[in-house]
Amino acid sequence: MSIHGRIAVSFLVPLVTALVAALPAAAQKKPEVNPAPEFIPGQYLVRLRTPGIIGSSAIQALEEKAKGKVLRVHENQNFVLLQKPLIQSAEGALMDIQSTDDVLLVEPNYVYRVNKTANDPDLGKLWGIRNSGQQDSSRQAGVAGIDVDAERAWDITTGSKDVVVAVIDTGVDYRHPDLAANAWVNEAELNGKPGVDDDGNGFVDDVYGASFADPAKPTGNPMDDHGHGTHCAGTIGAKGDDGRGIVGVSWDVRIMGVKFLGADGSGSLEGAIQAIDYATRMGARIQSNSWAGGGYSKLLEEAIQRADAANVLFIAASSNSGGNNDASPVYPATYNVPNIISVAAIDNRGTLADFSNYGRTTVHVAAPGVNIHSSLPGSAYDSWSGTSMATPHVSGVAALLVAHDAYATHYQLRQRILDGARPLAGLRGKVSTGGVVNAYYSLTGQAPPEDPNDPAKWLQQSANFSTPHPYVKKELIEWELSIPGATQMALYFSKFQTERTYDTLTLKNRAGQTIAVLSGSMDDSFSPIIAGDYVKLIFKSDDSIEKYGIDITGVAFR
Image (cartoon, rainbow, N blue to C red; front, side, top):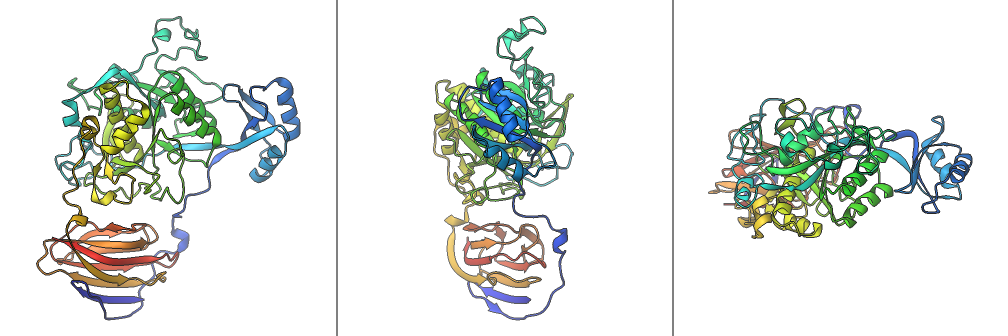
């Protein structure tokens, strides 16, 4: 169906109806919903009812009743890793284990993955730290001031070597020229005997951190064999004012490498729990987590709760599926533990990245995450995108806060970060603060100013347009809207629910140039700002998955 209309100020007049050509078939589509959680086939984490008793008799009884083999015992966390035959379905295996009298809890050994999105490898700029309007590596011009306001913060503090940030990831290249000076060092192991667990923490020669990429054989070497963790580490704390490479948000800091994601960017629930507990035990006050996956895990939640009890701030990526975490939780970012900050990603113009997850209540703040230039193993640098790249910006700000006030609790740090977020119109309704992390306002406690380009502060006028609810397949609807005398406009969407990427609303100016192509979920939000007094809107749907559609009930202008 095709509908054409014209709106003068706030009026819509339908003109024409016609058929349009089909768009790609359903078989070519990517699902919008989160896929079923991935886990290691046949492996389950099992907690017995009697705490602290995981002796040989208990293991033997479990193996017999659950018809499996205990691969490893984790006495400190009170669970075992059980292997079941691969020919048995996951549902059947879970039922077998749950029916065992001695079992209190059973969970699949979930798989977690990095949150990097592939990107143009051209040299980028550190717009996330200082945005003067320069182009990023994709040649998109930025908007000055859309950054974490690090330069003003550095007039107050550039960090401290007493602050330890754990990068729980693919490891860290602690020999990188921009990271070596800020690498965390376990002095007991550095000055101890090779091949000996000098500090008695259960790990041999863990000088720069530890690796749980193979949970069966943890090692004391967190060297990065992927790149993701090193990229995150550079944004947090690449050495500043040293005449080379890049600078992190915190010039001076200690980066602890805690590896549980392997060379392919994936890791297990078992490894994640061990990694978090190691970082907590070894004194990392800030834990930076640029990974997601799996389903809800009580055992993983408990590891984060142990970190919470140890005064640790847990900063996590919201994920890269473009979904609403309020409706479809993503872990670990969405656990209801009070030490968590969940982070969305914006580009250098302050727009929520199209891949970024969001959530009015469960995602807390945004940070730069598109075409972020940072360190890679072997003295290299590159620009990557993802909520993975946004998260270390927040971790770096947290490190500055701890350096400035070492006695602040993790709850106080969290609140300062949220209170200091600078409002951006495009983040209203997308993150709980409605803003982007700001180091200066978080450090000073000053109230950040309102967004001067927020259409909510402009003149308002009603409008009245709706697609059919739900819209139909192969639909084409066109409108025109004009506000005589306006120099800028923005449409208000009271409801906006379309299939992301495939069912779109295109905005064009009077010259026919495309201003934006919108899709997905944008309830209670304004469109990108439209220069001039005119806009043409084109709604197209493909031949599958019809959603609610769009209600435009207002227009802001100035």
